[in-house]
Length: 556
View (cartoon, rainbow, N blue to C red):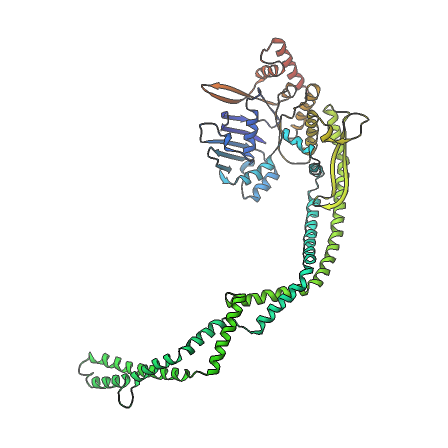
């Protein structure tokens, strides 16, 4: 249940702390006092969308906090999925809305996204306002109401799983059929690509290898001359000593003095090593010179191969890896198209199987709705009779047709408001007051099925008065025995039913309008009831009538 609500700088509410009972809490107040602002505050704490306009003028932010106690298993399950702990069955929600449009949400002091706040809020509170009556005016929404009552979630989830699988198969089949006309042309195109690239027998990195070998071939003469000169300088010729021989001579010239002057020993070693290293280099140069004997046929092949690779890369590149990827993708697509005939047959067989499965599940769901519809009509009719609508006849019109995401059914609620009249769509014949009572009846019936701990009714008394209003009050009182109920009303017949009566007042303080919320004791309730019934000029008779109203309500 919602145990406490704290509001600060929300529109005309400067600061308010509101304590709630676990039964029927009723808000009253003059028109424009701020009852709608209170509902906006609760919506904000439940993660609903709000705008910066609700922040009190001249302040940086609005703050709304709510303490929920005795939270149920359904809430604990959601909290567990979100990784949030709730100690002692309590939950503390906070929402800050800044004047610059920013928003901060917290659950038990932990910062969360507003979407998390909304997910939790949906398990805590259900708000019914005048706009909810529009659900009754929209026949396509009636199936939601019936399914909620029928507790069809498991059947719907199972049906959705098969239906979406059927949709997926159907899309694949349609795609294959659509592409069938283009198939032969595409297969020929792919076959040409595969044949053209395969004919070259390309291997990865070949273009780099060819380029490197060609570069050497093109520069073979200059490289040979450079290597020959280097070898001659190292090894010498018949007329000139090379660096190797000269280094060897230098080494021998100092060899005999290594024992006399110790500093000469490392120089001798280095000269000896240098002579050996240069001789080895000279031999390697000789081997390289032998390898530079270019075969003209090889050179022509390299140029031809380079041209072939450049051409294929220009067409399918820019890199050789791209050419090989094109080959692989083309071959895969060609294989897929080649097997499309067999694939289509298999998909059609699977589609037939799924269609039978989906139809069977849709039939089971439809039968479940039909049985639930009969119970639904009986219970709602009983509620409507109590709410002073004894002549109203409710019909759940269930039509079967093609398979959709909702099954094979279309559901619409029809009513006959007067004896002898044929049931017609609610949208065509129900008045505002009738819509409010019908919606209350539906909410009451469905409330018995769900586990939401708090129900809020925002001016559900619109369009009703007298005996009907009293019946609505009694019904809210009955609901509050199972659920915590918060109700905003402007009718005395409903206000007297409150276990906790809260007055919303608008006052002028200085040059600002300030709205306050306070809990009324018995005497204060008497004056508020008298005001609602007769206006500001309260007489003793009006107070006596109010007293009697309150006594009568206590005895109900």
